[in-house]
Image (cartoon, rainbow, N blue to C red; front, side, top):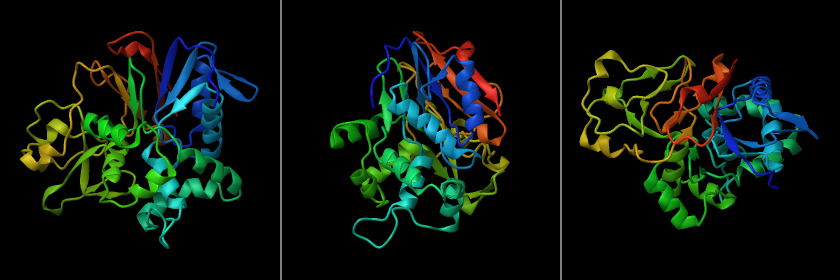
Length: 316
C-alpha cells in the first residue's frame, strides 16, 4: 500500500454492507473523483469502520472500491465483525478438520450473500480473504480513534502488549477460533461490543428474523443502574426489563469510554433517523444503509467536539 498526498482531513464512513451504489454517491458528494480506476480526494482520506461485506446487493463492487482506495493510499479500513465472519467461515483450521467458524444454519445465513456473489470469482475472493487476514483491528490516529464496535482501553492495551501492533494476522485469527482464548475475547469485544444476556431465557425477535438472547450495550454509560441505562440496539427490550437493575456481575461486563478522551468513531449498531453525535466525543456511523436507511460519513476537521453539521449521507 502506498501513501497518498498529505491529508487535511478524514471522512469516516459507516457500514456499507454491499451498498456499492450508495457508496459511489456518497464519495462523489464529498468530492472524491475516480482517477485511474480509484476514488480519491485531493486533500482528504476516507476511513472505513468495517462491514463492507454481507447482506447487500453489490458486495463485490463495494469491496473493490474500498480495497482499491486502501491499496492506493487514499483510505484506511478497520476489520468489522462481518469481515471476520467471512474469513473464518472460509478458512480451514491448519491442524483440525474444521473451519475456523462453524458452518451452522445461523452462521451460514449471515455470510450467504457474500459467498453467493463470489461463487464465480474464486480468485477475487481469495485476494480479499488475504486482505481481511491482515487488517487493522483498530486505529489510534492521535486526534481521533476508530474501531468497529467498541473501544475498550484494557483489551486494546493488552492486544498491543501481546502482538506489538494493531493488526490481525492469519495466526491470530486461528487462535481466536478457540472461544476460550484471550484473543477471542479481545476480538469479540472490539468487533461486537459489550452485551448482556436476557434473564429467564427471554428472547428478542428482531426485525431481520433472528432470535437473540443477548442485547447490545453502550460502552460510554457512566454509573449505569438499569438495563435502560445501557441498552443500545435497534430492537427494543421487552417492557418488563427496562427497569431491571443491573447486577454487579453484569456491570463487570461493561466498559467505559471517558468523556475526556479524543473522539471515537465506530459502526455496528443499526441506528436510524438523522445522524447526530451520541456524545461530544462518541460517534456511531451505522445508520442501517442496507435496510433502506442512510450511508453516513463524518467529515472530520480539527474540531475536538463533534458537530452535527459535519455529517454527510445518502439515503439508501
